[in-house]
Length: 260
Image 1 (cartoon, rainbow, N blue to C red):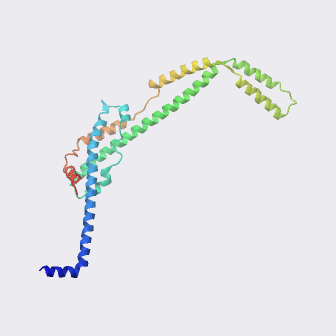
Image 2: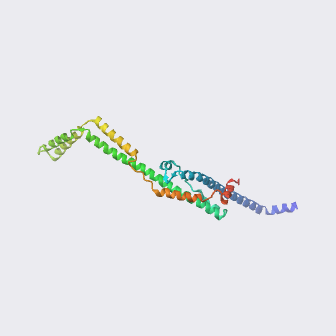
């Protein structure tokens, strides 16, 4: 018997080798694909559990119909990568339709909350930028007003310069006349008799008033009511979804824990 087997192997060793190589290649491919599915399941399971915690936290930012702007600004983005949308094609035939649709609906609600969170953060950043621009403009006006108020006898000096310009001899060339005018105007600007102690006193007082007004809400921060309404609607939908307890979730958790 063993002799016949040996003869068969010797006669067909090349074909046997091809079968072994092909089987090995198929096993490697099968193991790799299985590993991909396990890793995808693991990412989805971890993300679902993390989203449950983060969504509860975001829900706590709404109290008696009022959205806590500060808490929302400090909150972390709900998620950056939607692992379910990226890998759900692996599980179309592995999960029952109810579980598949349940997880799909869970991620739809989470995405809706994420969109509102990103919109809220964008509005807050725009508000900060706008506020800074307004403060710069108001401080610029305060500087000019303080300079004018701290200049002593500016009208008399300006009148004197204009009088000197009017007495420039007519015999001067146009270029000479323009040069003298520019010189007199420059002298007028440089020699303005300003009291800089008075300037800083006026400017600092105005600057303090600007800061106090802004800090007390002089510039309204607008938060669209629709953001709160959309988040509340998504939270209501999530309350009716038991994603962690569904059969598909349990099955994916087993896939995530397998070794091969």
